[in-house]
Length: 471
Image (cartoon, rainbow, N blue to C red; front, side, top):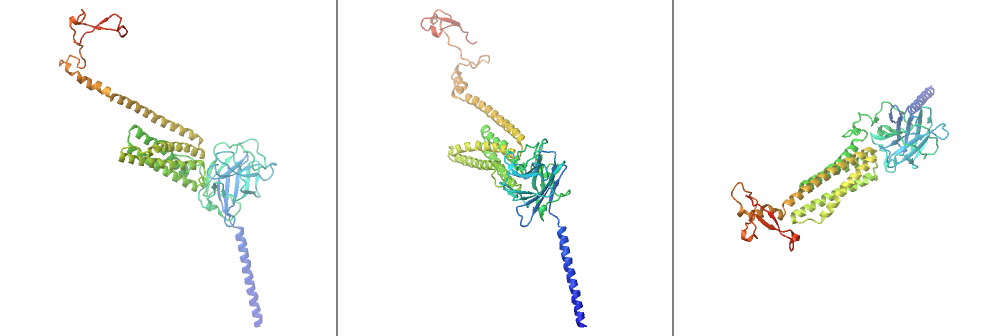
């Protein structure tokens, strides 16, 4: 009987353990089936883009979900702020226009046509197609978190992206990843995605209509407007552009004007020192923005290189000018270093102006380059006109201060002061001619003074001119 009870208990315990195991297995399976793939997405009336940043072993991979209108020759999107130094994915129809589209990863510099980037691998996944009204792309991108001088900041809450829609017309049908594409109309549209939100379980992400993605083209995004309403420039980029342009186009020329026009050395040095502080702030903000927004973070873009060189030359001009001024105050003679100062000073302004144009081109603001150059030419014309006027004024002033002019105004008048009359009606600054005796005037009256022409010195007849003495 005891044996029977023991067996019953063992069977009951076995059932309990089996049920627990089955429940655990079911729960685990159910949990796996309901796991949500991490995603951050952006949607509007034209496109839908979602990104997934896998965690774990796939530390260089990304998953994308992308949809765009099919009435364009090609469509695409990129990681970064602008085309330069970004990683782009260009989508167009395949050769047979059946099934999956062609997805081409590309990079470019200086707004040239993007070219195929072969250091990353794109796998087009199931569900990708081109219908009558839209491109649909589900893809897995390997080794695409870093490229060239750019990269994706997986810890950023506001990682920049952009998309572009090619022109309408005859479709591109090619399996070639380096097929030629026509330029898109207008500027690419920019937006931002949350990489922290997108990090998690890997897989094709879903579109979320109410997520934290932000559209940089909207008026509500304060981080894009900048201090002067720049539209699609970040606050850091706008600050950098404003400070550097203000320093090189206004402050430094103003300091030069104070030296040449007003001859105020300390005012000149103070203004140039203030301009140097502005350049320091501009360079610092530029480096910070480059690192934060993955805009050539290795500082290899021509705008960054020329900017650093210009900054070093600005510092050299300030140091040489300060040493030269101290030397002159101490010894009363110009310092030999001032020759270098007169070279590096204008050179720094020239480099700064050229680099501003490079920066505007990098940001895609080619029209602004014309306005910037016109503004600088106006500043140069104003300074040139003021310096020309000042030179003419100094020439007139110096002419009045020559020894001859001083003698004319003072010394000769004093020499004839003994002939001046006390009468108020007489000319105080004229000298009466000498008197003539009739017996010494060759029979002429005292009202005539004999004069001769120079060429009649030897043979010509004497001509007489009536000269009336002052009354």
